[in-house]
Image (cartoon, rainbow over all chains, first blue to last red; front, side, top):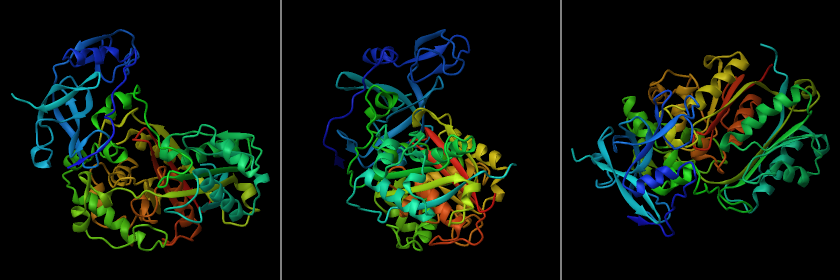
Length: 137
Length: 381
């Protein structure tokens, strides 16, 4: 195990992403959806990345998904202790996001692709980061 | 197709690579002067300058240092493929008469960090909000995100990554300037210390100080210059997802596919016409993706192609014959060094020279799949 000195980076919201971080602070994973083409999307932006419609809404996602791909990092970023899992989770609603996988030993044998996962939140500075753990169900 | 109107007439790398006591700018100008010497031109002959780094006015810095009065500047910064993009832009500029002689210069103190800081994504960008807080630690945790999915979808395992390394290490043994030259076995690659599973250290590029430069002009003017012209037959450039984790398909780059398709279309060639390929390899997954995305093999067949020796010494498509970024040199933005090897191969002067290279392809990634560029060079027009 290696711990890297320094401070763990914190996200800084912008007006376009504020709803996402306000959501995580309340324990909600929020996505956006286009009312014109019905497609959910992430990361946050004020118009649909697919059809450019301004008619979009914020909604609370289920918080469930699957482990799409990952690496187990052995050269920690500042403020991290390796090894840790950098995972791409595919949400039930479709969008994917980069996150950490918690509550599981960071070894390949415990991390089959398509493993069902669910969201939980980790406080880092002023932010609540959506991270994932193997699904209890 | 119309004959290639523009050629590379001068090319050089810095005198030293590896650990070099010089600033990024000094590396760029060292390479620039050598490239001008290579083609018998003086700074006064140059009227276009392209360079990319973290400094926004880099072409002006290079021009000032060399006393060049430029009428055409390109500071396009799209990561490691920037110099290929500059070459493509230079072809357009020369063809339409905006300038006559373009210098593309690159220098990077990637190992020693002299005269230039590393890029730090801002905390309020998408990378800063949606990737960095999870502990991403540079290219080896981002270029690699889709690798396990790539291998799983194609019925492969980690040994495919090791096969890429072994084939390229054999090429590196023929390059006296390569940092990693000792032969290595599959087992040694797989058992080496982990950087980010499934990647071990030899599956990740070296980190060096280095520079390179090329001089580009019309094919007509090239006829009066001393070196055999290396003609630009075609090129393409494309954007990818804004951040790596948002690629629509983590196992294939749409930027690779579109840049490659444009390069082949503009050259009027197909992958079967290519004699030699340089496929940007900051991590061992990238050449595998490029083989598929550029159409050298069908999706799913890159692993077998490498395992069967096609990219190795004596293979049907020699790839990364300088040893690649994995073994030779990688200062942070590798595209210039890939181009240099393609030029050497077309000229017939490479350390690991391949027989009869008439068509050479160079492909480079920009950032974490945010951009890509492909250039096809040829010995004739």
